[in-house]
Amino acid sequence: MISTPHRQTATLLIQEAVTAGARRSMACAELQISERTLRRWTKGGQVHPDQRPLAARPEPVNKLSAVERAAVLEACNSEEFASLPPSQIVPKLADQGRYLASESSFYRILRADGQQHHRGRAKPPARRKPPTSYKASAPCEVWTWDITWMPGPVAGMFFYLYLIVDIFSRKIVGWEVHQRETADLASTLIQKAVWAEGCFARPLVLHADNGSPMKGATMKTTMEKLGITASYSRPRVSNDNPFSEALFRTCKYRPDWPTKGFATKAEAQAWVKSFVRWYNGEHLHSAIRFVTPNTRHAGHDRATLANRAILYAKARSQNPERWAGETRNWQPAGPVWLNPERGISASEIRDAA
Image (cartoon, rainbow, N blue to C red; front, side, top):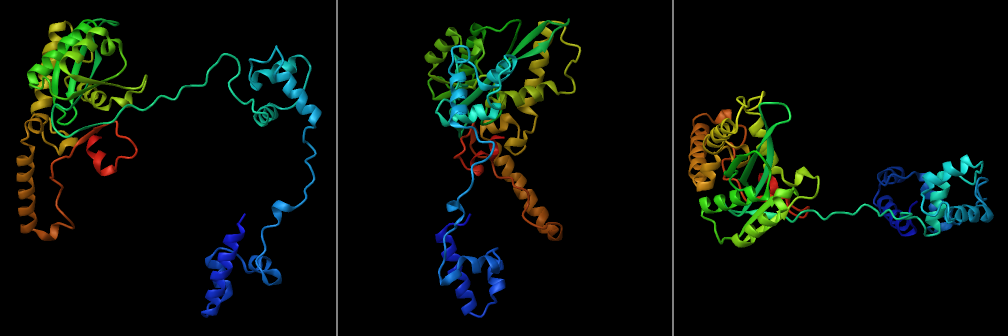
């Protein structure tokens, strides 16, 4: 339905086009209306409002009467059905040999009467706020950590790998393998990582999920002493901790990952030590322009990327016909966001994937 002001504007535009020499049919087609519609709008020399809302229409033959609507409300508010939704009330009435209205009519009547809400003691699902966004512009500003299982020598036995990663450089700044999950072990690991990276008493955000080791009293006390800001994922939302989850995937998809499990804790520790050495020192990470996490963490990535840019510029100058556009982007990756909000531009978060 087109409003009267819009009809007046369209009519004026068409008149101007016709006055300028355009055909009326072509002007109408540009506004996606027919000449017949235009004639109906301007009948009698003036623009008429839409008459359809004012038309007298007969009531639908299937409309419930006031008595029937009252019967539906009486049934819904009766002691027997007061705590039940229409999806439960209608079948129960059918079992009693009573038909008052369809289930959709029950909902419609309740909505019209302001009673469309959770009935009984059930509460509507709570909307959880998204986790706070944090921006890492340098190493040791935002860390994430998590625990994953490592298969043991027999089915049902596991070792637990604790991993802490710096989201700016993707460097693994702390790791340990244990035979159980506890807040005490996690607290010790956090302290070791902070001292090893020399970021004591500096602003640091530590993000984790909602597991008990992450939120234990010992862990919280340690973080307060170290001046660390705690950040947590929403319950059962693994996407809120993407950096740790991605790291675990890289870890478990290594070619030398033992599919039959680790025989001992010492064997698991030796494997993780080798993995961390490879990941930090040899793995060219796609999110940081294919430099190693150690290179990015130490701030040496700019020199490495500058050398690549010079090499590509030289190659292009030697064979310009092979380059349709610019050379590959070797600019250093920018700041990294943890759980960016919708208002943050795509250019700011593209390096956080």
